[in-house]
Length: 63
Image 1 (cartoon, rainbow, N blue to C red):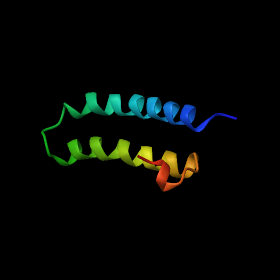
Image 2 (cartoon, one colour; image 1 turned 45 degrees about the vertical axis):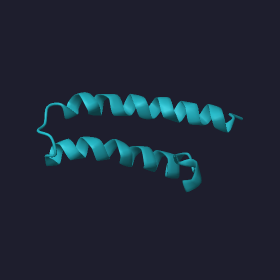
Image 3 (cartoon, helix red, strand yellow; image 1 turned 180 degrees about the vertical axis):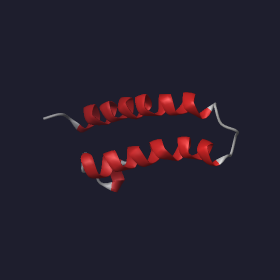
């Protein structure tokens, strides 16, 4: 079984890899516009849903 520290490191790397393309895509939009905001909040939503419902982590494990 994978240790919690190893799982957190793996999820951290996964979140970074998910956020990277959203950051490159965000520069196409005017700042504080609706599409710009979506490129910020969609990766956050993906991150929370992955940690909570796929990995079954408690809310205390989500930094």
